Amino acid sequence: MADSSQDLTLKLQAIADPTRRRILQALKEKGGCSLGKQVGLCASDIEVRMKLSQPTISHHMAILTKAGVVHAKKIGLWRWYRRNETVLRELMKSLKDQL
View 1 (tube, rainbow, N blue to C red):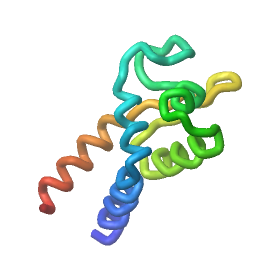
View 2 (view 1 turned 90 degrees about the horizontal axis):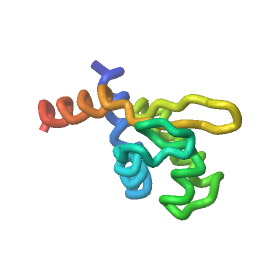
View 3 (view 1 turned 180 degrees about the vertical axis):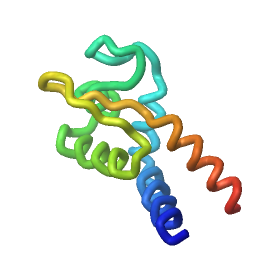
View 4 (view 1 turned 30 degrees about the vertical axis):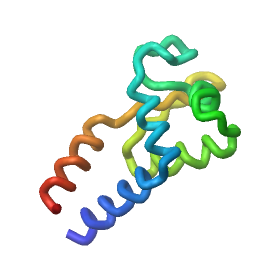
């Protein structure tokens, strides 16, 4: 039980930041990726949308990835991110069950 509570806390801390919630919202958009992917965005796409520096975006994406709410994949020189819809659905269910 402690592990699931810690996991929930990690996810909630990750999405507590307004910038990270904006990033998650941007990752829902279809067809906006410079790499030609239907879903998700590469790091440079996120930088442009959020109007933040590359190190700042990397920091936010590391937190979202560590929490498991975002998948990251390196493609050539780029890093491509997409939402982990399964984890996000489980998070919503967990919140509903606990509140």
